[in-house]
Length: 156
Image 1 (cartoon, one colour):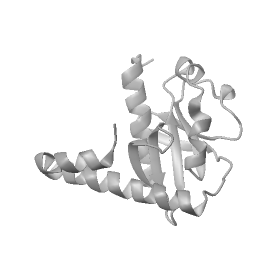
Image 2 (image 1 turned 60 degrees about the vertical axis):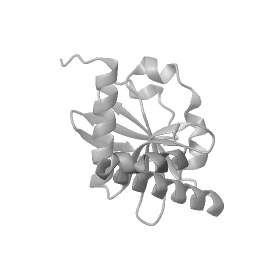
Image 3 (image 1 turned 135 degrees about the vertical axis):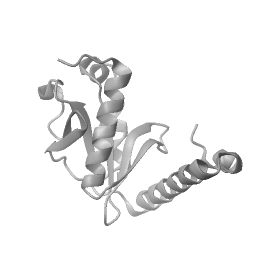
Image 4 (image 1 turned 120 degrees about the horizontal axis):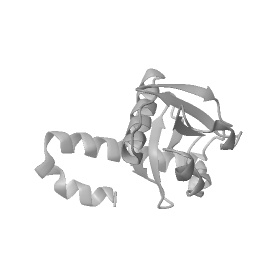
């Protein structure tokens, strides 16, 4: 069996979940700070303007020590946990979506409840998503030129 540490497992699960998003036609954005101060591991924009929040869990200890996942739900239409194939799936709440990752592949195992965002929150989230995505893309091309823009993004 492949034995990897906490950071590596987290990175693998996040990458696999992001690849799944792309396969499904969703646009994933990593580490998105929400209006309530929480930071979504992945916030993905779906065709039609829906938002999916994906919370990556590296293992049972990570899940049990972090009960703030309910605070992400007001900022998405659908909420998923993404875990690796060794994770004990029966501990995850039945109303949440479930993505299971193996290697660099991932599959949706369970669809979540869907709750539509209110229009004002959707608009604010869409603007935030666009600013973050555009700022990160610009920073890849011109890191020095974007330093001032980063102040306006309020990521930290």
